[in-house]
Each structure stands twice: as C-alpha cells, then as structure tokens.
Length: 216
Image (cartoon, rainbow, N blue to C red; front, side):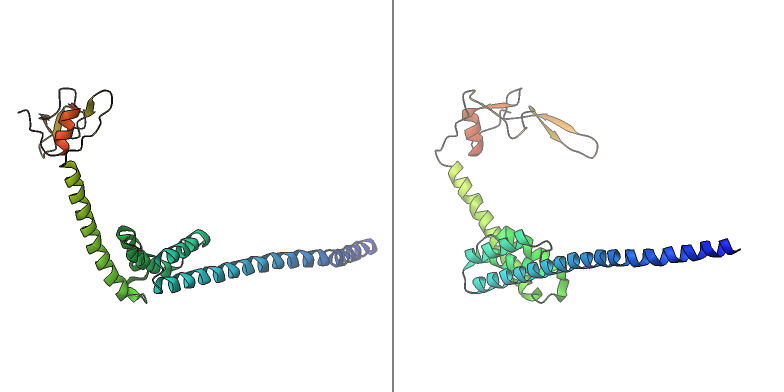
C-alpha cells in the first residue's frame, strides 16, 4: 500500500514538473503563432489600403478626363488585388467607355450589375452607360463592316501564295455544302469550288468582292 502511494506521489510530482517545463514552451509557441497571424493581418490591411488608394487615384484621374492614366491605375488594382473590389467593375467599365473600348465596357458593366443587382450605388449610371456602350458598339461594328466591304470592293488583290489556290470558305474545303434538316442532312455540291474544295486565286478575290458567280 505504501509503495502504491509512493508511485502515485511520484506520478503527481512528475506531472507537476512536466507542466512547469512545458508551459513556457507552449507559451512561446502560442506567442510565435500570434506574431505570425498579426503580421499576416497587417500585410492584408496594408494591401487593402494600397488597393483603395489606387482605386481612388484611378477614379480621380477618370473624373479629370485622364482616361489612359486612369486605365493604368485600374489595371494595377487588377494585378495587385487578391479579391477585386466590386466597385472596380463599374469604374473600369465606365472608363473603358470613355476610351472607346465599348465591348470591354459592356463586359465590366454587366459584371457590376451581376454582382450588385439593382441595389448597387452606381446601378442607375451603370444602366445608362451600358445602353450607350451597346449602341456605340453596334455603330462601330457597322462602320467596320462597311470599311471592310469598301476595301474588298476595291481593286485590291490578295496574294494567295505560290500554290495559287485557296481553301473555299463557302464549303470549308469539303467540296460539298451540308444543310442540316429535321429529317437528315442534305449534301449539295459547292457551286464555287472545284471537286477538291479549292478556289483559284482569281476566284477567291472575286468571291471576297461578291463578284464570283456560281458554276451551276
């Protein structure tokens, strides 16, 4: 019985001794973890401050009609931020509109509405800009189409290379045109290419200008 009591006392004493030994180690470990976490929080806070500053500088430049410089600030935010601020989608879209980058403007303004819905601070202005961007985009595309048509309608000739042949864009070089139908596909011989799906260089240039007549 005395020996059992001695063993219990020994175990208790060892436990107490270990607690005194390990306590500073645990304390040091906790302190190090706290320091690491504190450093991470400080780094995150500094990044947020930097992003906010860049965004504000970009907005100020945009409001001063310095759109190219504002664009660089907004791009810097995109390159720096781990999580993109929602308002950046609006400002980047608005600035892109002023730069004449209408397709880009449409993409970013749509993102803002997707993220904020109708409750966003800039919702009304965003909708108005989106409408203007869409209209301007259609005008630019129509102008580009007209310019391309004018160029192709001129006397320009495209060099087809040493072979003198080009894959027919009508049949994609298949020699046949496939029409999808409800009761199956219909295959028709291409009225422009040869049996191998090629055009001569002269035929290709005529086709681009809308002057190549079908063979049948």
